[in-house]
Image (cartoon, rainbow, N blue to C red; front, side, top):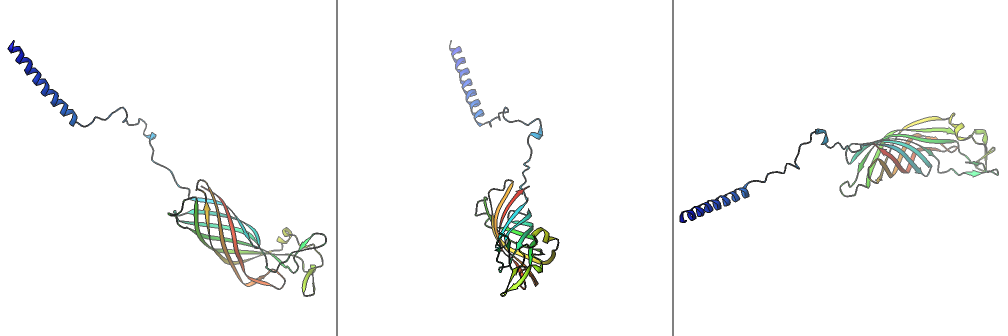
Length: 252
């Protein structure tokens, strides 16, 4: 009996040693990864590198407003980086003399006494835009400064036939209120050329997600040393002035 008791104690002692040894071994062993959630896709195309490309190009319309009236333009914009963009602008706007004063006859026909020519200014500008405060202002308001340079055309068309005027009391007046209409005068017009430019500032609004909307103020200058006659006997040598421009475009 004593032999059996010693045998039982020996077996129990060995079992306890084996138990503690195995427990310590498992505690120090690294965790075995759960293969049920770690896998390699059978189709490698399921995981693809990021292919997002910011929209760097834009084109659209410019609506110009000035003391002379309204104008319409087209633009193409290419973004070199987050701060600098290049632009190509083409526009057509009306040109008037500050001395113009529109009158009406008894029949309601309008005319400008003493006006000799109609003028249209047609600039083609290559310009640069530099974004301001890129890291300080949220992206839905993007202020910029801009400057451009390029050939500027002025189309000169007659306003009325010379026989339509008579000189009275130091001023010109109509003998016939039927001045040459705008579209008829175009076939008698001619083009004048010079080098023009502008400087300005503005901002784009909203996030750049397919559309481009902005507002800017620009000062245009188009010099003609010999002058162009708008009013009878009056020659203007510098054309342009302050323009407010509304921009509506599309990014691609």
